[in-house]
Length: 125
Length: 125
DNA sequence: TTGACAATTAGCTAAATGACTAACTATAAA
DNA sequence: TTTATAGTTAGTCATTTAGCTAATTGTCAA
Image (cartoon, rainbow over all chains, first blue to last red; front, side):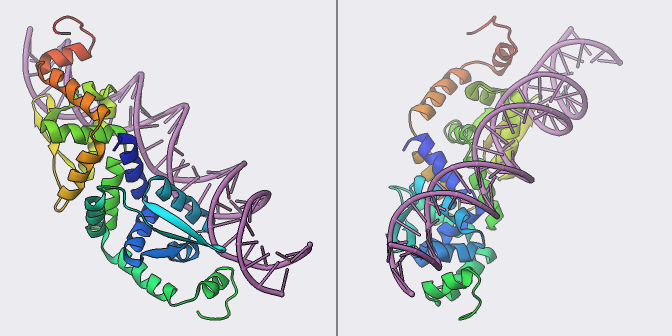
């Protein structure tokens, strides 16, 4: 692997929000943009940019399904040791809180989640 | 390990010059500041700042010997997988060139190297 | 004890980065 | 076919970062 590729991977992982996404995708396999927006508590545009950086680094792949986009991990060859270290190294209260938040988020349908995100505080809370 | 610590490690490694230093220290065990200055071809003050960042991340330790400071790797618990991945992932022409440069640098005494660095183009070239 | 000097620290500048809002694209529903 | 909407892209701003030079610190040698 070229040095630049490696540095791109390290840069991609060295942002807190992106690291949280990677940890989340390791646990939850596949998440849509709106779910990630909900965990990170940042604007959709920000999530979009973070996901683009992870994709450019080759760490994530996306799949479009209607209006939704789903993301999952895509481990470059030989990167498993890195991910295993990362998982252990990131483990802690903060990641655990993300996981718990995601449990709740997964219990909601995409439709209701998106409704909530645009401020219609009806349905499930 | 706390998330912040992990992110500090990733940030420390995601700079090209710092990654080169880590690769060099994995191969050459111990290097002094002036030798690192010579490989990276940046000012001593810059090397000093990079080494401080690596030390704060817990990746490097230093030893003072008279006017010289020597650095070596200091692997945090459980980080061996990370270093092994990193070594493979960084391998390539650029790192190889650094290694060759370091072979030559190691063949020179510290005194002559420092003399060269302050512009006295006498002695070995 | 004074001068030389390797390394660090302080202060500066230019470039990179992450967040936001607003504009745009595409898909689905009315 | 018009409207609503999930996600992306463009543009702005504040913060961080890597490099430099200059000043400081600590150690050795005259």
